[in-house]
Amino acid sequence: MFDALKRHWDAQKQQPIMALFEAKNRAEQFSVQADDLLLDYSKTQIDAIAREGLLDLAQARGLKERRSDMFQGAALNETEGRAVLHSALRNLDGPDVFVNGHNVMPDVQEALQRMTRFSEDLRRGRFQGPGGPITDIVNIGIGGSDLGPAMACLALAPYHDGPKCHFVSNVDGAHLHDILQNLDPTRSLFIIASKTFTTIETMTNAQTAKAWLAQHVTDPGAQFVALSTAQEKTKAFGIAAERVFGFADWVGGRYSLWGPIGLSLMLAIGPNAFREFLRGAQSMDRHFCTAELSQNMPVMLALVGLWHHQVCGFATRAVLPYEQRLSRLPAYLQQLEMESNGKRVDMNGQDLPYPSGPVVWGEPGTNGQHAFYQLIHQGTAVVPCEFMVAREGHEASLDTHHRLLIANCLAQSEALMRGRTLEQARQLMIAQGLSGHELERQARHRVFPGNRPSTTLIYPRLSPFVLGQIIALYEHRVFAEGVILGINSFDQWGVELGKELARDMEQLLSGAASAADKDGSTQRLLDYIRTAQS
Image (cartoon, rainbow, N blue to C red; front, side, top):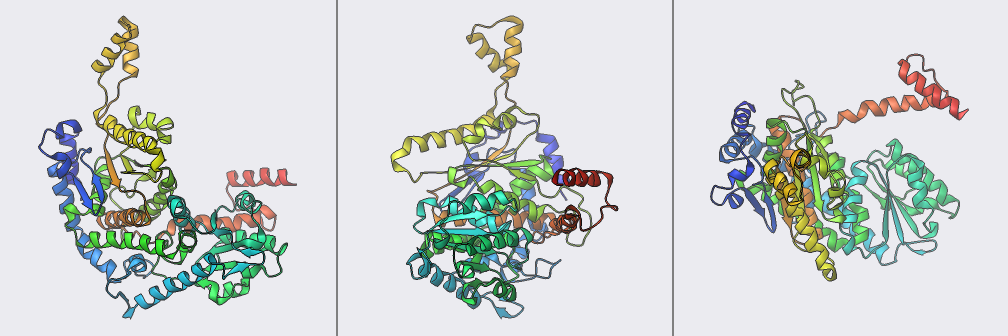
């Protein structure tokens, strides 16, 4: 389905991006606004013909229809027979939403009200530990139960006026140990985030935290909250029903930050700021549902991504937030994109005839400039870059810092596009007094190929509302890409095999089972580890 677009790319890929700016108003025509967000994609090789072809593709793949189906509660997650309704969690004042004839909005509103009441009780000292008001929250989860709240709590640090939040995800005991050693057990609360209450990493960490608490308090279960639907298991753990917050199966883990999985964020910033966070996402939902495709920010971001990966063949995508507090956003988007669209078959189980999702990676600027920008500027692989930066920072007294931050962000995207020719490099070396062979040798090291594409997202100061917009923007981008690729973006069977084998491997490590049926490599690795342990 990408054949016509690939032919167009082959015909014009040698044309410099800079040449496209000879057309009048390219920057205005190849950018999209949603509220106070601006997405500029003019520094790509997408021209009017390519954009029209991409938009035609979106139409042909039924993007509008699938979008309507999602918001109306259809079972878009076909392999699991589930609706995909994370948007309902931020539907603060929108229409009713039905799943199998049931209006889910009263349940959503009740869950939000319960979270609000608990947050207010804890933040105002009505809910306390045995040593007094709660000072520290430890969220124990993994994947979507960790990446989302951990990212958002860091991003919204200027809005924290509640207890300090910590996040434990790795089953490596060092992660939990290093956090516990700095806590007062009598004034700490633990949140166990696991829908089934069976996730092995999460429950291992939870049991260890409970044992640690039991050394210091008489009723450790009273200092736990569960974000789970497994009420029998949470009861057996010792968690009272009023401290159990469940969520429906139509909320996928990596899309769950908007509901009970976001409890740690609500505790940190307060219910009012959390509702602003939801309103930001709701605003992006409305834009996604109503804006024409060519002026639709999630759609155009998706089409740019498809152009670069499926059409141009660029294997990876770098997410580069020029905002230190968004330092966990690339990791969050890794899961969102790669767990959603890292598939090999279409909705009918047939092998895809084209690549699925790209590798997503990144770091905040300006740190990345002193790490991997060498590769994206002069390496042999082209890496499309997605820059993002705020118009203003929170630290008004440090405006020089923010001006320098913006300058670097804009300069990097320009440098990737513009590059430096060999002749320009020669002139630099002549100015330094070089000549002959040495001039030529040194000049070649200073050539930048240029013509490397990027997008830039500019947003106002990073607030709860703006963060909600940004996360929802990327959620809908992933959805749009998945629809066009014809895949199910909402299951994740690829994580299952490793989990199954890990359970068996633990038995082998303890000597409780034989490794005779394992391959030679695995047998030798097991022998080497067990020998060291004996």
